[in-house]
Image 1 (cartoon, one colour):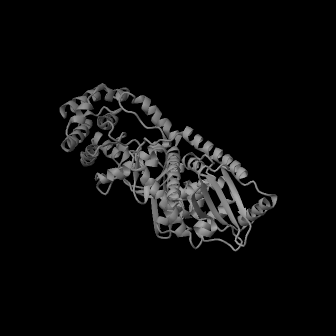
Image 2: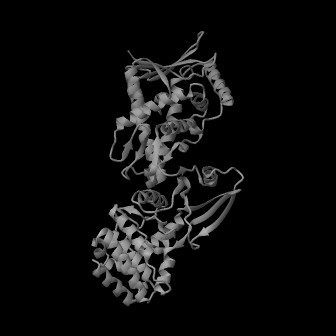
Length: 520
């Protein structure tokens, strides 16, 4: 008994030639042959792919046939009978594709995957790209389907199935779904190296299965086989230029703030384009910070136009610094080591802190594959220099210490902590304080650590009690006025002073702990 019939391929997608086959899928209940091709030589040659219904269900759910049959429902098709069954299987298949693609993004990008908006056509084109890796002649069909005169219509048909599949998944706790995209909203959907290896193994296994099923289903005469092979070789040579989305599906991914650069080599070109420059722009680079820093200041210029940016590379080498600091501060604070995690934290915090009314450099773009973050370069004076003058008695202006304390209090009140509150991470420009190093910033966290680190780190290797008392009193009073004394009281605990003890004079330790008690 026939359960469903649909037409697919060039005739339905709008790029058929005079000698093109008319392709159909026939779904049969309890079909003993499993999967079979039937070629009909006639005035209009037809190719029928007959498949058992249960096998097709298995192909949709778990690639039982290596997606040999169900994969054809990625693209536009025309139901002839059994439309409800075909739609159900298409959506079930696309639901699995969405899950697999999201796990892959989570594996590749870690926590940064939470910052991505994944449009529905990404799932389509990345899946097509993978299918073409297994069976390269399919590229001709894909290019014609999505770049021809019916390209937009075909795309909308395919994407509609993914949109329906997404709403079938529903807004689970780890996903955020709307009509245009899906977001990973929680680390509950987490990939790792094993998940990535398993994904590659699955793709290889499906490819082998697909070829095996193709061979089994297409048991035809040598004449037909030769004709099909020659046709595919000819089409490969005639293939039109691939749509960019098919060559680079990840170019479809979006960020809420800033551009998504495909790789490190495209960063300067991308920034120049955003700044209205042409290809002839000049580049000047310099190191930002000390020799251990992984950020560089880059000036792009063309004629009278000039853009200065900070390019920060989150490398594994930099992770060594945080690993050592993690050991040093083990009793009080845990630091993130993963480059992608630190990239995510800085990107996310840059946006969220601005929403809280705190100044941070504007994010220009991200190249996640290279672990690169591009931000505007904020030129100004570090707060550490202001404090240095105050400690030495060269100045008595503590205005910006007060401003920084108020900013930290505002951040804590908004549910964030910074993790690295050294004064050298703060730049003063135009009478305002900008927070520039946010790779350890997190929602929640240890507010007391932020207070303790600023005070104890400022006092390290110093014996200037009068200046330090002025700094500490200004900071603590401003913080308490904005956010109360609870975190200040917690910062008195010995576990917060312990990491700094080797660098503090006993008199300084006593001074700061007494002030913490006074403002508690």
